[in-house]
Length: 183
Image (tube, rainbow, N blue to C red; front, side, top):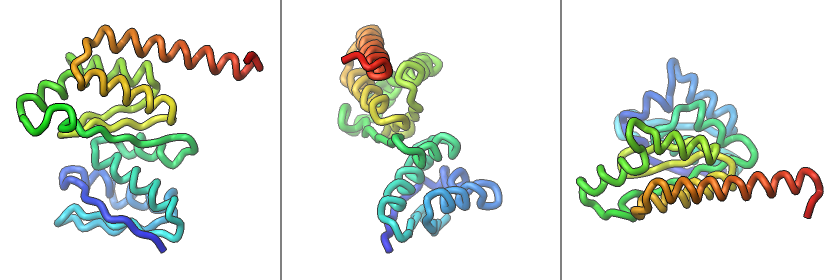
């Protein structure tokens, strides 16, 4: 028996549980685990027989806690999907003004930068409080993480977008070569 405990912001607990507990039940069913949610403290205990199931479910709960909808978070139960979390404070420290400004760089005007990153990298991205979270296939999450790190580090959006386009072209070329046996 393995278990993990984590904290979920109180404003995200209702999303984690769902109407009449439907989301919680779905997570328990897909993850082969038991979730104990303390709605007063926000503590969530995940218990299960298999430590891999507990680990994956922990990422699903963490994804919901970081702003993803349950539908997107449940993708983590699929083979080849991963969750990654970037702490914005690693780039700007604890300055509230710098934190807001740098969050704005990732989100962009009316969400355009985030939507563009999601589209090109085929990932889902959530900017929530002091973090940027990414869900997607492993290679795509790696590329999205690098692009977000460049933006957080101050690189101009245009440069990051050009880098992303080059990376995606390289990936498409490699996929084409693998599919057609060209080495």
